[in-house]
Each structure stands twice: as C-alpha cells, then as structure tokens.
Figure 1 (cartoon, one colour):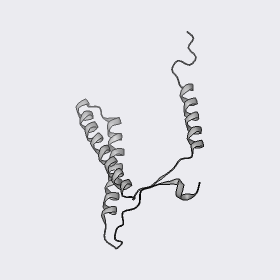
Figure 2 (spheres, rainbow, N blue to C red):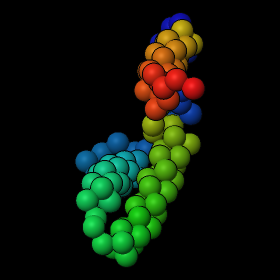
Figure 3 (tube, one colour):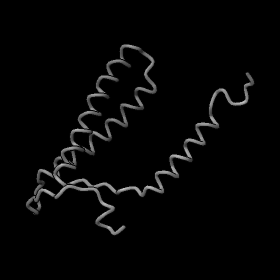
Figure 4 (cartoon, rainbow, N blue to C red):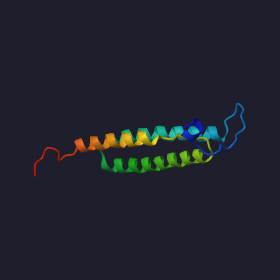
Length: 113
C-alpha cells in the first residue's frame, strides 16, 4: 500500500491562510474542547454518588458526545480530518487476540457442569 491508499480523507475545503482563525481552526478548537469535556464528564459519572445528579450528568455527557461526533463529521466531510486505514491482517490479529482474551475471562471458565 502506498501512502495515498492508507489515508481515508475527503478532498479538503480550502481555507484562506493568514494569521486569523478560519472556519477549520474554529471547528478544530470546538472539537478539541468537546473531546476534553466528554473525558471529564466520564470521570464525573464514575464518581457520582447521587442518582439524580448522575442522570443529569449522563444527559449532558450524551449531548456533548453527540456534539463531538457532529463536529468530527463536519471536519471529515470537509477534508480537514483524515484517518489511517488499518491493514486487514492487523485487524484480524487484533480480533483474534481479544477473542482469546474474552474466552479466558469468561465467568464460566473452570466451572464444571
């Protein structure tokens, strides 16, 4: 595979390059903020002891996660975000590794019928 085949990306929407922030810069900043917020909310959810507070934070977390996904989709659509294509062999190796791991972690291992 050459480098062009390994990148998954749409054609980039061109932005004027100067010292001021452009649309891409703003969306990238928003995306970074949403990623940070979803991480922080996840920690809060793990430590919330009050059920009503937990439910409120869970709702906010879901909304923030959706905003993050929407921003990612916008950046990807405009060619401002690219992904690396995974090789089939590496995917199969990872799948086999985690399948074996899950098999070893079964709560029924070692229990005779």
